[in-house]
Length: 127
Image 1 (cartoon, one colour):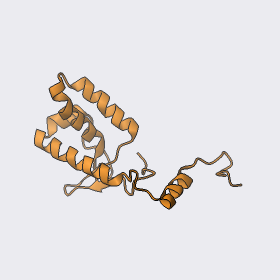
Image 2: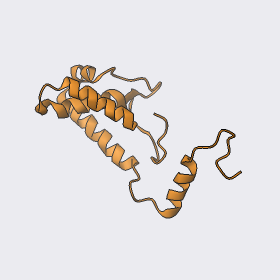
Image 3: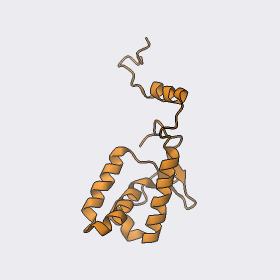
Image 4: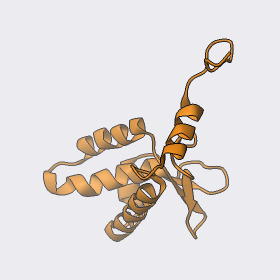
């Protein structure tokens, strides 16, 4: 995912050579779908959902390559406690990075101006 339009930053560095990054809406949907395939009961859904989310959000700091290639690989490679702690850290980061409804009028106008698509001639409509 490219840098979020609204977020101040799109990743945090952990102390172990890994980063957690924000996910696009599509990546979150993909993680939910993968978790639905992995979970065999409702009791397993939360753990599988967190594992699939981490498979997408956890990257190596240097080259931003994924640490795990799937939610199943996360389940095989981490403990329940590690998955829970990393998922909680990602959730807190997501909430911190999300400006929510706290933008003032000037900040909102700036976001709108910077996110408007330009025309084929590169003009954003003011030409």
